[in-house]
Length: 624
Image (tube, rainbow, N blue to C red; front, side):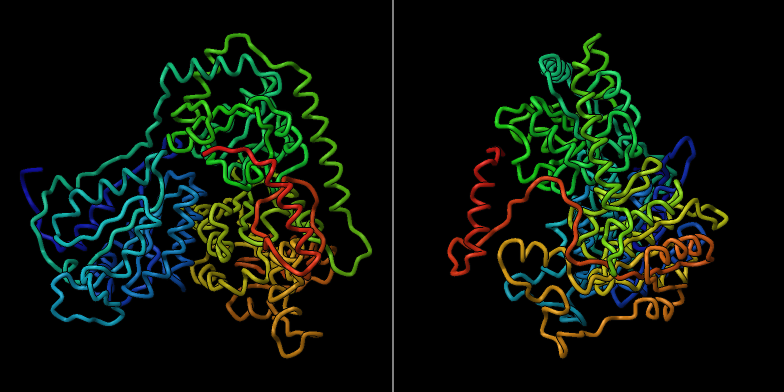
């Protein structure tokens, strides 16, 4: 860079640079960074906030209530925007920064972009130790921000104002790279934020970024075609990479014309509508029996845009020992897993090139007919599970059935850890593409409401109106962990509907605990160390939500819930609906899971569980 310069503080220059980065979404040029979630403290309030205040109409700053939750909201926004637009989250030093480490883990596991800017201690060390500084006796340059190294795709600490000239473009390149995509972290020491420097004017020239579409090699395409032409019972597994590539329609068309049924991972669910003729439902532990049967009998699995997490593969027990794998992925790391034939490249480009090279090959029509029959049988079972009964407390499936029916096509279902991932993955019938967000890459309790705020923000137009609302489904356990963004959405005017399923504790982990032979312990409230086990105190979630400014109702029945959903669609702010749900009844189906069970124990129930796990593990596919 050369020519004219402009003298700015490092913080001012950083903000000016971010304001001049743009991207293109559906032909429209928009800011790459849509806004900032910020909680200010002594590590970012005197310099970074000064710079952000000057551009608040161009780069809006939103006040969060918790550093973790505001970074989770940024992740929900990135998901809703299919990684094409990014939010920033900034914190002070110390606990403000460490609060965001969990969110960085969510973004890293899910391959999602978020820019994290944390204040840091003084490079000159003159006032050390400062407030909130932890000291490492043998490593004086180590701060809590080093904790982000394990959960960031890009990590840097700025110790000279000139360093942002190279660091910021590299951070953005990483976040927009489909192979390396993930969180970028930049530590901003307090004394470096304040220093003025003569920056080249060219550094602040407007830049429009495009997301690269790496094309696979001809040799990999040729080998992929050879494999496909020998397959008799192939199955496609579509992951989140299909959605982020914008390859939903291309994959669905490829599957239909070639006669190959396809299933989706948790991250991929929502790429197509529930009743697509080649679709067989979600895959794996939280998936459909139709997809499980097809996976167990597949001679070739075409895995597109997925990292093949254990919940997808049933801990690698779902496939036959001689099943072959064709992995299409922008990341070589994922494409090469489990001795697969890799095709390293963008999902959309790779599918198009494979399709062109396949000629007139199609799969035996019997494979698709079998898949459609299996999926029809599965849906019939879902209908039975969702049908109302005379039970005093409804099941998750029944609650989801009501909420799903009342949701509009433009509404997005958002959930995360606990019992709702499996229950929604099985029971939620997607009405429009890209309207389902289940955070299960990191299985982060607390993502639900915070992520819902990000989705609501993504749905908001320039005039403040929303194209649909996020419908957040959350258990009482996750609600108790993180709920303050109900208040955030009331303050900011971003509406969502929150459905709280109260089953009296951590229901799904109690299911796992008791299913492996351990008596119920410390999960449900009634099994915890509480004053009154026979009648433990339950939170009035509706009253709590109203105290934060939301509209709220407690529903006593499925009929109440249906009426409340209709009411909630018409309210002018975030609305919370609460219903008691059964902690013991779960939708059957899906693959099994590898968990640790004590090798020796006096309890017969645990010994039997161990035997069952040993039998299960004997079916595991061996690979890397």
